[in-house]
Image (tube, rainbow, N blue to C red):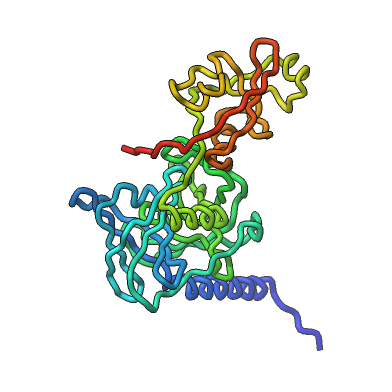
Length: 322
């Protein structure tokens, strides 16, 4: 006997499966999600979210949530309220690590960025407006976005999602249908609906490991003021450059690596450490990934010549946010 299934029944089966996937994911991740109450100078400065990712109480959150904090109160889903200490924060990636003392912590499972696909389920957890353990769900809208941090640098490989985020969600986890963390919720496109962003989990793991080891992320710095510029196409073709973008040097700081390397006002930086520089953001990206103190070749267009210099980046000064 053939049994026919209506479209309504098919829809209900799919919705039930979706609901079970979301609730299962939430059950797995929610106990690791925490609420952070931040004070600066003895005054309550705001709240945010985070999640415990090690058994000994290390928490990932956003830099903008805890930067400059003088006290951090951490509330767990099981009712515990603990004092948190700031291990380190990195405004350039908008990531930070906080630690609490204790035991029997629920720990989030970290996924991998390469497993994330556009269209896959995305579930955001956090504490918007102080409402603990709030869940929203949607999909991964796009991958590989870039987002400007408060320090002015670009954050690469950002995940775009339509899972609704609100103030207080910052620092909470974005998870997949299996409850594995795929991103750290960080920002909302204020003038639009359904456009929210999370820092990819691979970026978070890398930055967190450096913060746990050193308390900061060391980035290269050469001490040059520059701006994006387009080279004449004839010049770009003559020197075999991929594209005509470059960084025009406006000035080199006195005593800086740029000055020591012989950079001059008006030079156009086109390559650093063997990588093409098409603009200021490219220059920042390369300096972030290049080892501090390691010499690198710097290629510049100077008038009608392609000149190779040698520069040794030093550690960038600490970022000061208002």
